[in-house]
Image 1: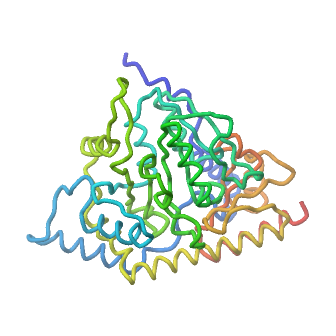
Image 2: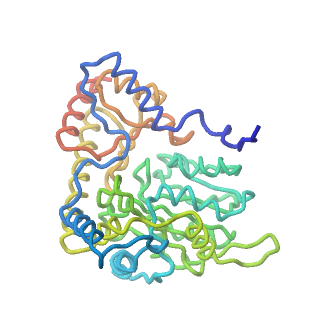
Image 3: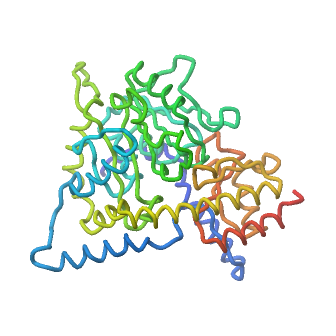
Length: 403
């Protein structure tokens, strides 16, 4: 009989979102007439922008011609998309990234989970807590132990590097943060970069929600910080900035200056390792999807997708104000599409999930599902249509305004 990878047995009993689905299904069976409003899983609600849809259709038509047909594409991505990323996401903000440092992928979740493969299983891992579960679970699957840095109200849900001399080989950062909505300032990122360079760590910086930052003083890329090229890998996504949750397109940047070491002490390019991994395990994002992604950077695409982001952020503003009127302490929702609220009376977050579902028929995400420091908190998402958001606010105020 084949031996299993027993590290899978060290995972929590069930992934967070399937457990939410199980509880919602049970409630629906018990209350079939209830109209459930979903503000839990961070899926987008608005349709693709016209410029994106039109590019997708043009590319599909192109593939139906003899001259335009394409089979396997380059694993790293097509040049037209890589150049658009270089110009609009980096050069426009004064950052220079080389074409061979950008890798187009089918999602930041996949990249966040797969990057750990190029590091030794003996590497120590540090995450902020609460945390996006993929950072933790994929490292647990590989047999690594995790160090947690609590993200609390006291540190604005954006902890800095450890001050007690603690070290790690890998550290995952997410800004704007999922689930708390917190954002790291330039000074805070600089402290992380200094810490990583001091202890030889690699930062995996998840900037999947960078398009939601409205303050120009806040960094949208870790490479806006001096020294980050030597110690940081950056993840970005089209999922939330342009509604690609179903299309699947993202990218990661692995600078040529970012290196790891062998057991014998030799220095190795992480970019080259990642390129080898992708060439072995990945056949690239479809041509039509990459054409759609490139359309996001067109004048029409930028205008249309920025309008969608503004729509979601207006949802966030309404939720933030409505929840506060209902007596909740609310955080986030200013530079991120997520709101992080303290549960009433410090109730356990799964208990609050059940109460919110039962009394308001609204679905959110329990903070405990994001780690121990998430207990007593709850995440709501602004990814919904306006009618759903306004109705959810009304129901929550009716159910909780008096405790």
